[in-house]
Each structure stands twice: as C-alpha cells, then as structure tokens.
Amino acid sequence: MYSLVVWDWNGTLLNDVDENISIVNELLKKRSLPVIGKETYKRFFRMPIKSFYMDIGFDFSEESFESIAKEYNHLYKQRFSSMLLTNEIEGILEYIDGCNIDQYIVSASEQKSLDVQVSEKNISRYFKKIVGNDDFSVVSKIEKAKELRTEFGKEDKILFIGDMFHDYEAAQAIGADCVIYRNGHQETKENADYRIIDSMAELKEVVKRCSA
Image (tube, rainbow, N blue to C red; front, side, top):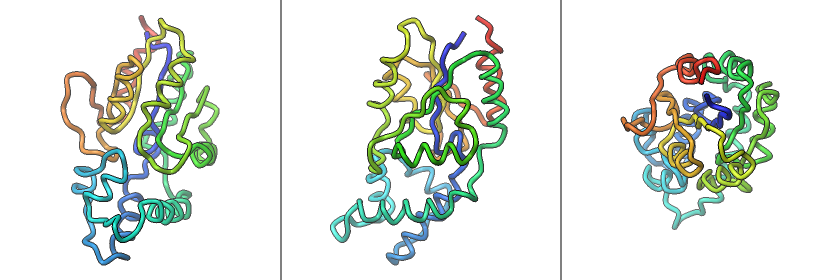
C-alpha cells in the first residue's frame, strides 16, 4: 500500500498545456520566429526550460533567458484564471485522501507563485506540503524532491505522479514508483520502469483503495 503520493503541478494537476503553447507562441511571434503546434511543443519540451527555448528558436545571445522568463511569467499570471484543473483530478484527490494517504506537491515552479496557484484552484487542503523552487529558472525538481524525502519515514512506500520524464527521474531519486500522465507537457515514451495513464481515473486502480 502506498503511504505517500507526490504530485507534479503543471500538466499533471493543472491542465495548462494549451495556455502554455499559446504563451510560447506569442513570445515567438513577437520575435518574428516560427510558431509551433502541440505535437512540436510536446516533442521538444524538457527541463531545463532554457534548453527547450533554445531548441525552438530563441537566441540568448540577443536577450537573456531571464528577460524572456519574466515576460512569460507575466503572461502566465494574466491567463491563470482561465486554466482548469485536469479532468477528474478533484475526485482522485478526494479518493486518495479517503485512503488516509498523505499527498504532496513537488514542482519546478517558483514557491510563492505555486502556493498562490494551488490556493486559487481551491485544492490546498489535500496537500500536507507544497514544495516549489526558489526562483523562476525551472531547472529541476530533483533536489527539492530529495529534501522532501528526508521528512518521510524510511519504510514509506511512495508514488510519484507527473507528466514528464523528469518526473520519473525525480521519482528515482527518492525511491518512488512512478506514474506518467500522457496528456501533459511532454511527449510520453514507453518505459517498463513507469506506468503511463491516459486519464486520472486510472489512478484508482494504482492506489487500489488502500489495499496492501
């Protein structure tokens, strides 16, 4: 039986993929660069985010990554209210909570912004702790996951749920099983070391109603 569930935020709990593509394309058009579709976005999207931006055409010899990140975050904040939680997620959070399984969020998003976003979507009550990064660099969540792991018991059985290969890497770093949600930010590649789901409802089978 899982005693802990660790969630990713963007693309997993929060369905912000289409809005992200729209924002990225707005930034590209402003710089007279070719826009991208969802297939291309998901194929190239990765961490660190700076590498993703370079892959799709941004030139950091012309302007800094930090300036683009600031512009992106401004647009993201403006559009956040229109972003929805992933389909079926509230029912799944309630289900896991009913199994007396502690839930956490570990995200590469900046901590203060993350706290505000989770609160605005009215799901903070489900999480024992929400862990983000110290800045807006969106480089990695592995170190934060490791820090959180020190607060768990050695015998805790952990499930890590995300939408990217980087989430699998974070899961490995803390000795957790991993589930990857196919409809998030990154193209999902088959891997025997994690389970892929197409809908959040499939998590009920993974958790198995608190059974051993």
